[in-house]
Length: 491
Length: 98
Image 1 (cartoon, one colour):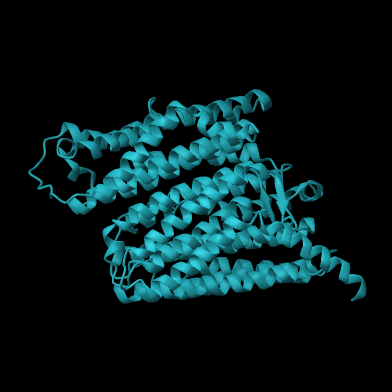
Image 2 (image 1 turned 180 degrees about the vertical axis):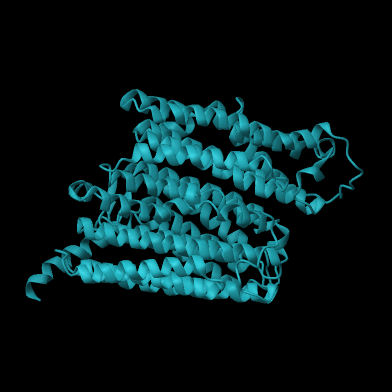
């Protein structure tokens, strides 16, 4: 006991020193509790108090995260968390994305008129944001498991939040069963990694020991661990949940689900790749990237249901993300982050528009949008711009994002000269063209087809329109001035 | 040591087989539980040889708690599915087209 005392003192000192860096996450935990209490006390009388508190709280916390850039590249809590620049940028992205999601869910019909109230919904959003932040910073296999599970469990509840309907129930069940299997496989992989390296800390030591171990065993362990990340990224063998979960979920949940966990998955995969650089990441990620994007984009071609279509297209986007990750370089990381920003903004925007139109038309089918472009010009034009961004047509940000990812992959090709990278570039180009076909179905219906006498209700959706216009403006702005995001990587 | 790993691998395989073959959502959950316990057994077995104090065992405790949380949420969702569909056979619950 005597000889342990100085260790305890040192440990306490380190934890106290780390608390300052952990402040945004601590406040998020506090926000979660405040939201639950608020729902119990004030929720019945002031319905709008929950979203208001959540919005202001997350705005404050995101502002606080912005001040952390001077502490970039610190390791704290005994190596549990790595505050890299990439993680910090991701945290800001999560905060901003979550603000849009909250603004959207306030006007999302199934959430607003949920029989059990909506206070818990917003407290769950705060909890899931905490999980996402931890995921971006995870520097220890225990933290990897904890943060991924935190995000997963909150997401399961969010998908099944509207209990009165059939489709969300089905989606939630498929999601929870698939997700639980993936995390079980990941846990098995982690246990093998622990056995192979004798360490849970994701650092250079870990990589060195992994390089000494038997290649086949390492391959097995890494692939099993990849199951957890791949589930979040909706990567090729783990993408089966996507279309069903997307079709059945509420639009505001989907705006969250399709974007932020994917970004967190990419962030955690980058952390993991750095800690296991001996593994042949470039080849395997290139193969997975080609399969993922081709599968997603080609299956999207046959879909009429917009949410299902965007589900498949989001698999396609995961393929492009993997392309940037396969490059495994500083340029690749930059490209991946920029891609994530643009994809998040455009996809949240697209789901807000789908939600808005669904509340008017009561349909999520492309064919029901006939001639709507002239009745709701602002929303339709924004929709077209966001879709252009998702395809990668110049004025919007998507073009720059795709360009950066392609150039990162090409740069990686010049370094390692693997023919697989050329194949990946070709697949990327073909897939961009394929994406053109299914995305352009929507502007075609909106502007070029005659309407069949739909009655557009005179209800005003000012908040949703403001969200849509802001997101579109941001997409164009970042497309013209990518340095606004990229300059953070210089320091 | 190798005995633990063999038992773990066997448990994992049984769990995976259960997940893919069962016609009942609860039994799928039981299969998942098998897989989780295989991993936990591995962790504890490897933890015996760790230089640092009991990392593997601590990890196992966290994993057990997380497994319980996941199962609680999954059961709630399955109850909700049963209310809507009057069945919990994943193969029969398909309102959505493929």
